[in-house]
Length: 335
Image 1 (cartoon, rainbow, N blue to C red):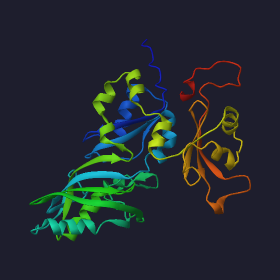
Image 2 (image 1 turned 180 degrees about the vertical axis):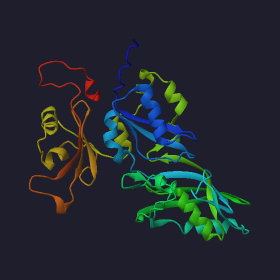
Image 3 (image 1 turned 135 degrees about the vertical axis):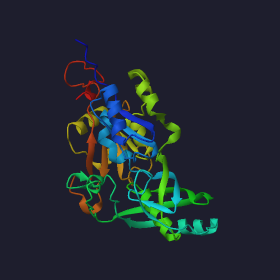
Image 4 (image 1 turned 60 degrees about the horizontal axis):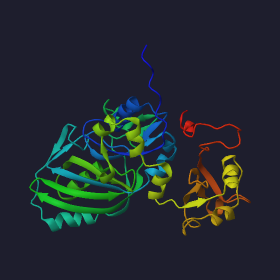
């Protein structure tokens, strides 16, 4: 009988350059089958036709996915003018056609500039947004249209990269949860025609960018040691996301891990960053730099006597010091 492959138990973040074709879930499933981690997920979906930055979280890092995926997204795409599809991308059926007027760079740039700012956006029918536990695209494929309430998004920048007869190459910098397909369909209507997103690439899910990414094939070809070297540790990844840190002494770190509520002054005394007091979420480090917890300051109206923060996640010690035995320093990752 073949020996069962041991689980991959290192925690961290891997940035993969997703190819066109597979879903984000397909990418996760392939690497889960290859490495057998206790947990593996991603911080933000890419459509099957899209390529680019897909941030994967291994083991304990999955507990931090919301923080790791909260940054701005940068997308480059090509809007094909004159034909609209039911999906808003090249995988769908053509549902409308319209003439393409002559367009100048100034005209397109002005239309893009008008899209910058805060707005409400309704999830498209062909999207992974959920309704009663099922993604909207599952209903759409059955001919059922589900309307979801619009969600607040922010378009931070909208830039014209190139203009050709019948197509526009552009770049959007936007908040998490923005549907670029919907933005480009709106742009086409503003310009007096219809269109669909012919190609899309996510170049960054800030602070993670395509320069940090490995291809899916490269990731699948790694052995465990190579993958360990490639992973960004949880604390390092959160630091890149802008979370400041407080370092506690051994006793205070142990008490925090045991569930004791510590005073605000304990964290401020161990602050390693000047902006700790004014931050939202922050890291708590043990003396050896190990990530002990991720906490969030409570807003003034939510604070209670003796309680100034809420716990996002607490992480166990790598080498428990109070059990009287020496444990495997990585065993906590195997669940």
